[in-house]
Length: 120
Length: 172
Image (cartoon, rainbow over all chains, first blue to last red; front, side):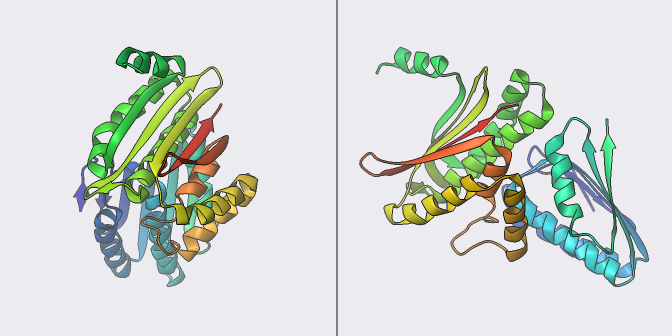
């Protein structure tokens, strides 16, 4: 699955072993954006032994925060089931907002490997 | 007030963006990139401009979802962004139902009293619990505005229908 970025949605690439999401996230309709991604992610996690997730966001709105919360919950559950799940939250060194957002999500991650990665 | 007075008024108060009328998700799609460019042209601090932009989005979506004066596509209101030597201000005005003012006031006053740690806790708690009854989003908008702003103020003005005014300041 590959979604090109729009001015309100990030570029999304989902393969059998990884998911990459990059850009802005404040969709017109969050459910329409989120549901197919969460569904496919759950399928891929079910079928894999290990899964890699890379997130590099410039901005997301509060409606999308709920999507990310659900997204991380799916990953955390898979990790609790014994899958090897690693997540990179990539933020620009100049962007405190996205660093803090990454730290917010980090707190709830216990089973999955979660790394905050500063990029230039 | 004639047209030039209106023009001068906006300039004198440092308002560089102002939209008044029907706000819908389609309108927001059309203006959001331009707003972002304008904000980042004024200040190059990416952390700061992302906060300004984020508050603009939350305030605009509040009008779209909750303005009492509505069309099928969205709600009627005004959203404006200004800049001065102190920093940025994002203002939003929309009609609202008088009977909802009491609970909104209590909710916002509670947020105003919280420090950043308490706001973070409230944000995470709301995420876990899901949106409250009557919310059309995640129920996080005001908490997000409180977290991302340096301070915010609100007012309810009878003119004659009730107008809700929300101002958020974002300073470096």
